[in-house]
Length: 89
Image (tube, rainbow, N blue to C red; front, side, top):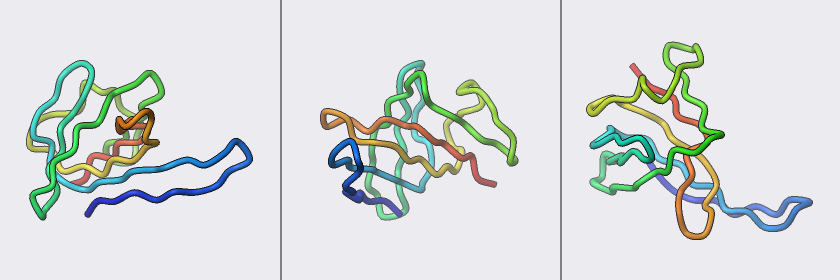
């Protein structure tokens, strides 16, 4: 459903977060996703955010409240940056 992993790379230690759930709200800068266990995380939409819908690349404008999504990205200064968002059917 959701979690974080910490890995060591050649550039240092990085923490990657992930969550599968339903979009609760969308703004121009973030989405709020609620997992099945009730956990809610806010994900920042950044310049490097990539969205996929039906196996095709889409824009962040495709994100809507109620959509089921998988989100993943690095934790940067305590914030979850959405690098990958997959809209699920």
